[in-house]
Length: 127
Image 1 (cartoon, rainbow, N blue to C red):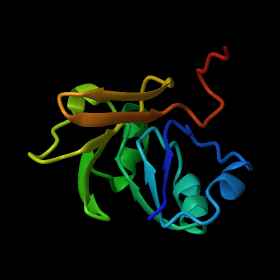
Image 2: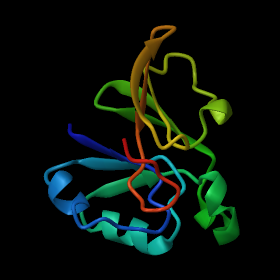
Image 3: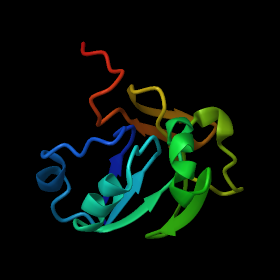
């Protein structure tokens, strides 16, 4: 199973997303989505699971939960926007988060922590 990770779109759907996510079976959006249009556009590519970010509050959090626990292809994944709000279930192997706008792949306490970085245009630093 191929999973596409995205976070911090802040209402912007980059035209590079569809080709980058071509062939994915599932898209996980780690919050600060910014608009229902982003979720609709992602849904045209593949199935989407998403969580609300701190900047989604003005959109009534888009009706999304703060975190989601998934079992995907035999792995347990915890999806959350802010790492400080993470509450992974026992046996969770991967925590996917956003918020910092910085891409991270790190291992800690037997878990893989992944932040895809930011895919929007607002509040970003380029290095």
